[in-house]
Image (cartoon, rainbow, N blue to C red; front, top):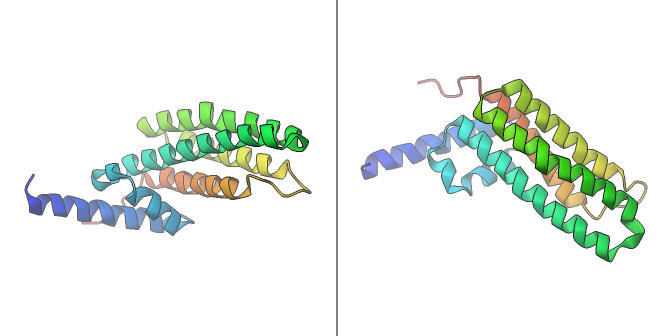
Length: 164
């Protein structure tokens, strides 16, 4: 690949990132997540969706780590934290895994369903702490936003974003 064709590929993928992210509810989070992954430089929309799903997986696993730490440090929150542990385990071990499979098959409705289920689980985790504040509020908020982004990116997979 020549330097000029490489730059054109990077410019085209950056245009795709900007266009795709503009179709989601959280442009800045979408754009920063995708641009920070070198695989996005030459990815198509399906590849960008997979990058977003992998980001959700990474962040959800970090949230599981935080839940396990809070279970040791905050025994008074055992019930809602255990609920979150179960919910996030489903998100990580089933919903995201199956959403990745759906993306690889271009099964848009199924991928969107898994993102809806993930978001619902994250919200159920957050709501389990009420009326008290959740120690997972920031992580739950970001993870929920990424679910929305991925849901929208699945929807974009059957559209033409860039007209030549």
